Image (cartoon, rainbow, N blue to C red; front, side, top):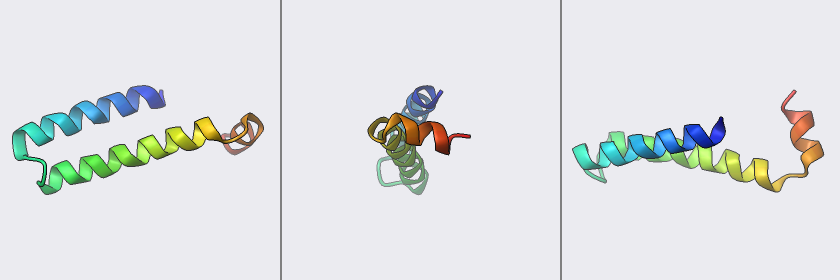
Amino acid sequence: MLGCNIESKRREMIEASNRYGLCANVTIKISQELDELLNQYYRMMTQPKEMYVETSK
């Protein structure tokens, strides 16, 4: 699920950058949202399995 969200947000960011430019507020906002998704993925992949199970309840 998270992987699909990351890929969808990445496509959204590319579309925004093509349409509005890399420095547009909308592109930056989407980029920050993508960063947060990537950070979540990184945290999920680097924490011990037991911690992930406990925090996802």
